[in-house]
Each structure stands twice: as structure tokens, then as C-alpha cells.
Image (cartoon, rainbow, N blue to C red; front, side, top):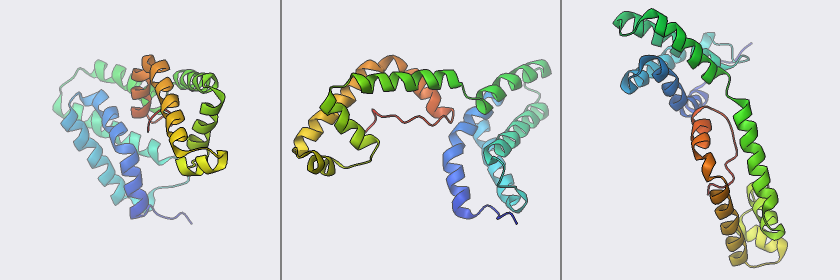
Length: 189
């Protein structure tokens, strides 16, 4: 038997997907307030039908379908756009939301790995212990038998290196973070 979506899961889903779905709807309706309203309506519809939703399937796809249909219905009802334009934009928007550009994600991931590889050995070691192993500065200092100040200095150097070497990727990062691609942003504190 499939468990229904509970309040906590729904709230988490809302927090994780709301912004992206607003951008998705905005691709159709071209008005931010309308897009927000449509996404809120989509979440309300989903909550009302939560007992009927198959959670073994991607809920995000279900939500994007609701938002798409609500957006197209809004356009139809308000006759703000030519039907041909709606169908062309639907093709573009669907591909952006449902199929994130893996090439961009892959390129950015390679660039991040290159920056990590270019860090001085001690700096790289401290950075990876913090970001990959989730150790606190004090834990790193104890493990490596160095001062916390040294850990802070090395982390600062690593983050500065990321800022400098990835500054040209800022727009890509902004796109990826609003397009539901999970990328570890190693250089953000």
C-alpha cells in the first residue's frame, strides 16, 4: 500500500520546488505574480489529492505537469498570447525543466575538480576534510595537529581560489541552482 504524502514531506517538497516551479510557470505566463499564484494553486491541488498520488513515481514531474496545465489554462482563459507561441514556448520550457543541461553540469563539475586539484596539498587536504567529510575546523585542527587559525587561513585561501577561478561561471551557477541541478557549491561558506 502506498503511503500518502504527509505534512512534513509536503512542506519539504514545497520548500525545495517552489522557486523552480515559479520560474517554470513564468516561462509560460510572463508575469511573476501570476506564476506564483499558479504554483500555489498547483501545490494546493496536490495537497487535496495527496491520498491518490503514487509516491513511487517522481512527484516533481507530477507537480510540473500540474503547473504546466494551470499555466496553459490561464493563457487560454486570458487569451494573452497566440496559440502558436504557447506551443513553441511549451516545448522550450518543458525541456529546460524536465531535462537539465547535463553538459553544463558536467563542465562545471570538471572545473570545480580542477580548482581542487590545483590547490596546494595542505590547503586541498583541509578543504576536502571540511567539505567532503564535514569536519569542523577544530576537528580538522585536532586530526592534523595544527592550529584552528591555520585551518581558517587555509580554508580562506581555498575559497578565494574558487572565487577567482570560477568567477566566469557565476551565471551558470545561478542557472543551475534555479534549475534543480544539485551541484555542491564548494566555495560557498
